[in-house]
Image (cartoon, rainbow, N blue to C red; front, side, top):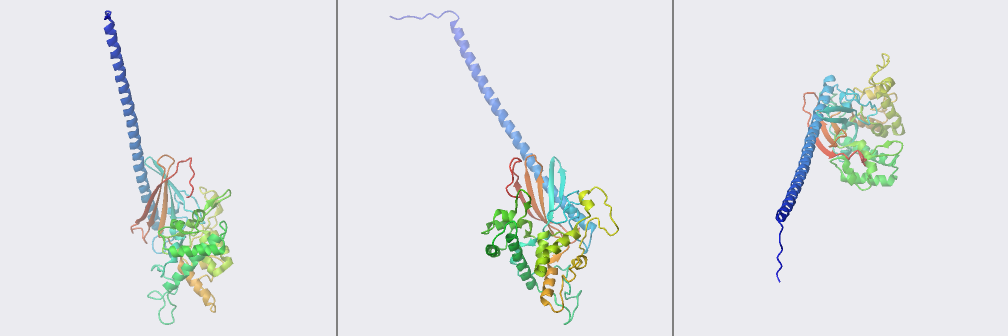
Length: 409
C-alpha cells in the first residue's frame, strides 16, 4: 500500500533557506581561510624583505668600515709622513683618536664605534706586525726591506771595501727566525696556563713545522695535539688566558713592531740573547711605552706633565732607540769584541724588529639588533698615504643570539 507524504505549504522554502545558509557559511569560511593565508604570506614576505634589507645595510655598513679604516691609516701617514713614520698603540688607527681603549701593552687594538645609516657598528683594528709570523717555520730566505737597511749593510749607503761589515745573510736570518718561532710556540705550550709536558710540546711543534705553511693561524686546529684552548685561549673565573692566535700571524714580512708587540712576543724577542732577563726587559719596554697614569685613568682630563713627560708614552722612532732608551740594553744589537755569538744574536735581533706596521686586520661587529654579523678583513698599507690600500682577505660569519654564549672568539 503506497503512502503519500504531503508537503505543507512553506516547508520547501525553509529547506532551501537552510541550504543557502550552509553555502554562505562555507563561502565565508573559504574567504576567511584565503584572507588569513594571504595575510600570513604577506607578513612573511614583508619580514623577508625587511631582513634582506637589513642584510644589505649590514653588508654595506661593513664596507663602509673598510673605507673608515683606510682613512685612519692614511691619516696616520699624513700626520707622520716619510720614512720616519712609526706606528704605535696611540695612533688614529689604534682607536686613540676615536676615544678608544688605551692599551700600551699592545695586546689589543682600540675600539671604534660608528653608526652608518640604521646600523651601528664597532670595529677594532690590529696591526699584524705585532705578532710572530707562523710561516717563519718554512721561510728559506729573509726579505730585508730596502727602507730599513740593517746596521753595517754594504752598498751605496753603507761602508764598502773589504774591511766593511757584511750585509746580513738572508738564509742565516731565516734559520734564526725559524728557531725563535719554534721556541716561542714551545714556551707558550709549556708555561702557564697550559702546562704541556716538554716532550709533548716538542712533538706538537714538530707537527706544526711539518704542516707549515698555513693559510691562517686558525688552521693549527688541524694539528694533532693542539686543543681549542691552546689555540683560542680560555677564560676562567679570574681572567682570560690568551692562546696562540693572539701571538701568531701569517700576514707579515716577519719583522715585529717594537711599538706594538705584546709582552709575550717581547719576551720571545729578548730570550735568545738575555735568557732569564727577557721578562724584565719586556716589562721595561712596556713601561717605556705606557702613558702617564693621569691619562689612563682620566683620558678626558689634561694631565699635569713636566716638560720631560710624553703625553702619549714613549715611542721608538727607530729600532736603534731600543739601545738608547732602555737601561741595560746598550749592547742589545752587538756584544763584546771577544763574543762573536752575542754579536750574531744582536744582529739577528735588530733585523727581526721594525717600528712600522704594514698589515692590519680588522674585526667589524654589528649591534645587538638582527642580523648579528661579524666581518673580518685584512689590509696592506703602502709607504705613503697616496699608495693604494688593498683588501687582501674578507670573511663574514653569523654571530650567535644574545642569549647564547660564543664558545670561542
